[in-house]
Amino acid sequence: MTRYLKLAALVSAVALAACSLAPHYEAPEAPVAAQYQTQGPWTVASPADQLDRAGWWKLYKEPELDDLEQRLIANNPDLSAALFHYEQSQAYIRQVKSQMYPQVSAAGNLQRERESDTRPLRSPTGPTDYNSATLGVEVDYEVDLWGRVRDSVAASKDEGQASKADLASTQLSLEIELARSYIDLRGLDQQIQLIEATQEAYQKALDLTRNRHGAGIVSGLDVARASNQLSSVQSELTQIRARRALLEHAVAVLVGASPSEFQLAPGTDSIALPVIPVGVPSTLLQRRPDVAAAERRIAAANSKIGVARAAYFPTLTLSAQGGVQSSVLGNLLSLSSSYWAIGPSLAVYLLDGGKRRAQLDSAKEATAEAGARYRSVVLTSFRQVEDNLTLLDDLGTATNQQQDAANAAQTALNLALARYQRGAVSYLDVVEAQSAELEAQRSVIALRTQQLDANVDLIHALGGGWTTDDLKAG
Image (cartoon, rainbow, N blue to C red; front, side, top):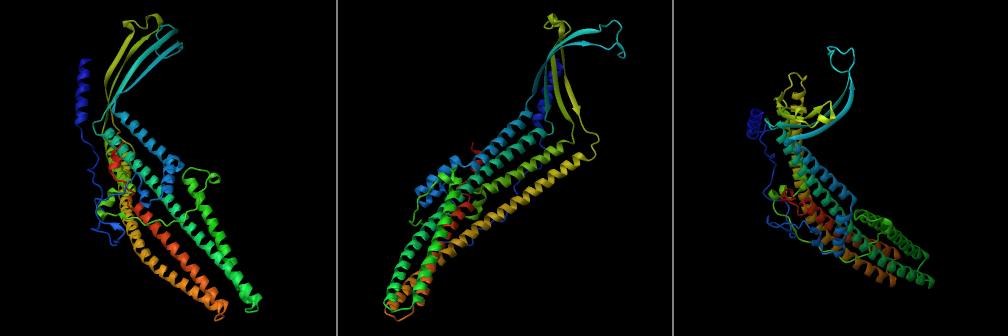
């Protein structure tokens, strides 16, 4: 038995020194520019600057948004589902790592047996009926000569890190969706405020035309036109309130609340456009959880090539078993009832119909697929940053231009009303000026909201303060 123990120790030492059959892993190269094409006064180019992952939304200085984001993190069901999926991956890592240790099993058996009288080679002197009691322990250990177990563990760890990055990506996407919904809702609040004020102005204009019509100064056509303007703006107000209600319902679901019991009070204060620390393109690959997840899946697929290659080589298992066995229960624990066996076993496929070749080819192609998906995610991430930088720049210019147009439209409306009261123009001129002024003011609000949305989307494109260091934590 001592000889077998020495053999087991020797084989274990060889296993520890064995090398993995997985290819040497390096993350695929991706095209990285020296700087982003679009820059603006609302960005910071220093790569040392970083968004705060724990509360990037605080850049907007909206306490209500901060409260909603905290409620999302605590109560959102989709985020909880992603967390449970991540916990599953951690349990799977522990499951795979268990293969690195000896497997110990115990069994007990107690039964009454009867042998067939016509059993081949039955001893004529042996009993026909007898008791059988067995109590034993077995230890099995697969010696990882070819790195199959270690590559399996490495693949499971890489998949676990990918799941952790997926969790971060899901959380960031939900946080971004909530921030956009909040900003869009506040934009609708501003539109509602504008249209309510416009409704009051149109009501006064209608009263004016009615008075002038009553005095015989203008025809009923002016009254009809003023009434049409008022009804149209009332309809727009109803439609916008409906859109706001739908957004409010969406926010309720994001924070884990019932839409029937959730209300968000109107707010019309403008949200300032914050400065976003963009950094340089070379840092983006460390700041996006979806990029990290794609890269970790390449590493996992690469390790599985080693697992597939190891299947070509023999599997060495060290086994030991022992216990007691007797036909008399009273003698079960006596020394004479003991038994044991120890020794290695070697197993290898001789013919498998091409199964191992197909498994190896599949592992290689899976690695190539993961690499292609990684490059796609990288290119998409750069595109999203450039898209939102461009939007911020162009929308900023467009907003300023539209504000000038709104100011001019307001002046035109004031002049049209003054000239109408003097009888210099028809009410049709007033109607056209009113429509142009309302549309111009609404466009200003819409453009500012779009610019804030692009600002939030830029944070999303930059990873929301996440870094690959978060994969190593926890």
